Length: 358
Ligand SMILES: *Cc1c(COP(=O)(O)O)cnc(C)c1O
Image 1 (cartoon, rainbow, N blue to C red):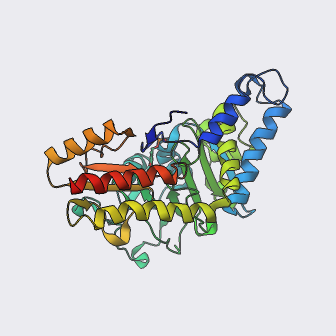
Image 2: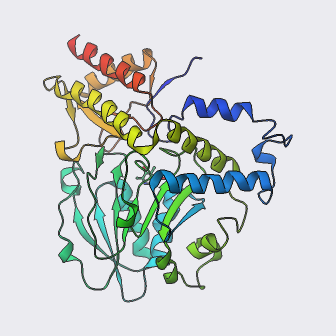
Image 3: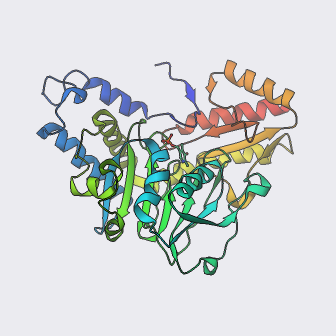
């Protein structure tokens, strides 16, 4: 097999085992004589996929019974609107912590719905860290506090989560399932699947049941969390193939030993690249401050644009894909989500060392 050394930020690498499994059943899923894509979403074989994906996610993330797991479409970007539409009432304020471009976009949509405030921001330092904040600064009319757990573009990540007095909303698109988390610290968690969970096309929402009471019937049906909760995310046709692949990715995570085992490998992978940066004596510079470093997206720069160009060119010739940094940071970014194999990261660390020595 000639698989690329894929470090794309999203859509991103999927486990080869998952793709092989999907390929094997592409024409005839479980003896149905049909692909999963051709099954009715109301049929028994599809139902097993759908419910299996929900229950596996519940097990892997240890999701308490008073939370719903929903499958939606429209990406994490649609959640930027749905969160305030469903959870922010007249006379309340939605509070945001700005730690990158995705939080800014989330705030922009909330402003269209109601009153907002910014509890903290690290914009002034080009989002190279998770900002400091004081929970007691939240006003008494705060509807929720929104954070972005991993900043895909800037390569920073929350190392722990606050015990917020108001429902904490987490955009976990780029680090969900990368380490154990305590779901009950959150009122709502959302994630587009295409970084750590599967292909694009499905968005996972984990919501505390009591928060569903905030969604009014005046909302458009498809933008109301209750519609999904009341209908097991089958009010209309769900993205069946994406949910099927999500289920296969969850099976794969389970086979790896679950989220705790995945975290250990992720720690190793991140350490390889950060060591390559730190031991280069300034040849490479990490964008994130030490205590905010992301284990999913490693961002770094070289001393000049010329050096960056040569690095990226040679990396490309060696078969590495997706190492260009986002234009707002420049330099390079290696996305090392769950499905990126350890040996590929070893190869990249090796390449970085050789390149800097040369
Ligand atoms: C990729 C990403 C998004 C956008 O996701 P879409 O599914 O493309 O809308 C939002 N937030 C974070 C943290 C992301 O990494």
